[in-house]
Length: 367
Ligand code: ADP
Ligand code: MG
Image (cartoon, rainbow, N blue to C red; front, side):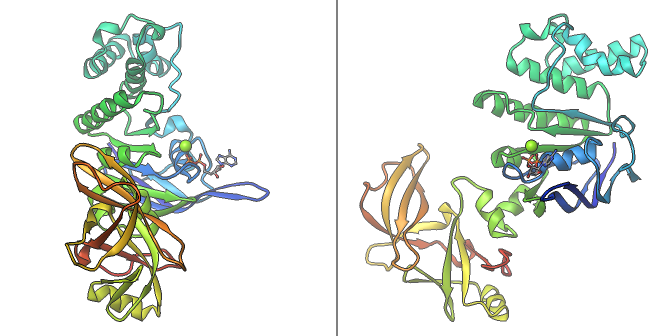
């Protein structure tokens, strides 16, 4: 068991031009925590994980595991176990030998090795497959063997880099629940990398969002969703994505395609203090509602209605001559949505359903 800390840790790949793949990362992972690193492709997730594993240099700052500075240590001295996307198993070895291989190299005694392999196999539902070769297993079973290889080492920290990417969609959902439950049971500090925000939100105790090597926000899934710290996080977390649009500010609100959306007082004060005349306005699909009969509202020209059973997502264009038309999504109760081409009017549910960001820094304004 151990906590992990990145202390202004950077990895700069030599150029030209040099790439700051991870840029002064400050991040604390508590003992026993399941922390997810999420971000688009190229945002530095794998590099950050590999720095922790000792597979990539730490060019600036430091990294601690269990309070010990590890930047100068070899991977094998760090008490970590890693599960990769390509968890290449040894094809000529049985499942049991695959799982026990690292222990054998560490000269762990036969009885102890066998005990740990049996225990891990029981946890992973692999007991009946221990004598098989990897090729006689399903994709999901192979993935579990890869997990087993990490578990038997009883490391202080698990590191996982997109371990579910090779599974089909249904199995991925099942396996992510199994991994989360297993981590809970073992209580081993885990740093888990994924580009999939749904995976991040469902698995992580906390989620760290990376963009271009920079940490945008690290918070619980609930906080990320309810109070994204930046416009980037706002747009990245949630599906369908938050509606975001640059709008003109007025004395008491924001001008959204001719309709004044009232804003909370502290947001207006923050915008005023920052001298902003424009801001990025964000509203989630469930933060919009159809306007009542005769009520003023933002006009959406319907492009598509997606009926998902419990909900229907209505995609439409918010017209505006200056800004150009932009797509907005509204969530409504299930059922057939309005026909394509129809104009509907929508309003923001309440002022607190609105997120407002500084258009230059992207940072959240107040609230
Ligand atoms: P992610 O895992 O989030 O997709 P990576 O950590 O793999 O991102 O990459 C982050 C950035 O660092 C990217 O711009 C990538 O091109 C660059 N990068 C990764 N590995 C190397 C390397 N060995 N040499 C040079 N640039 C690299
Ligand atoms: Mg990666």
